[in-house]
Length: 292
Image (cartoon, rainbow, N blue to C red; front, side, top):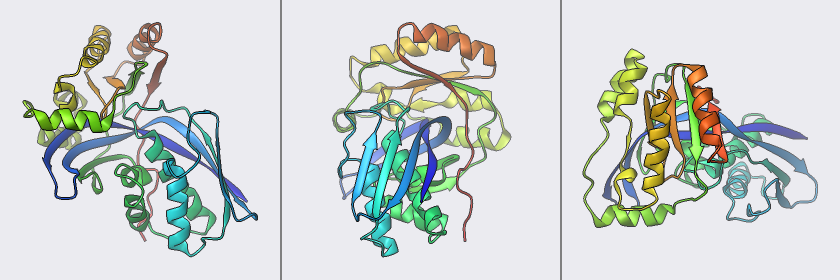
């Protein structure tokens, strides 16, 4: 028996970082959005008692370093099914090292698929709790949609949906180390913070322009030469009329929001000449809705 599940990418409409916590994590304040760019996960129940993984990308680890594997083990333990054999097949489309929660989204998709295979053992809230054992962004990716994420990213408050738009996503060839950026952020005070309250008000009013004017990611402020490329991509997106453009997560992907589909396609076509990983996407609502 097998199921296929889409693993949708995540973007940060805003990202703010607060003080370091006693557990070593930082206090986070983020507006997060699911988008249509996705991986595809196939979960198959097998009779060999083994947990096996395969991917269309050779360099993707197939052991516990892969969050999808970790998620499967967490689910099976919680369900009392530790001896169940599984085959996880990952078809990757979300760029790796992009700040788009590709690994976290794969893990969340595994949790949703296994829950369906076992007849809905856990509620959405219970799956999100299991997800916290896997990784910080996994809880958001379980249900997705538009949400305010606080704590270390695991405290989620659903928000009104992002208004309809096209989102151009562009990832340069390089990736950026998350621990490295946090170290740089810790070494110098954050100069600017996103207007999170203004973004929430914009979502309540369905005002896409107001939302985009307030989008901001504090990691763009760190002293890192690679941010020059981020700025160049943002500038190109502005040339094609984006309402707003920022880096997502700790990068290196940059996205721009457009109301005009033709302008979005033109921006993507121009950027794709220089940056291989360029996509046109759109917002996706909650992918898991049951609460019982």
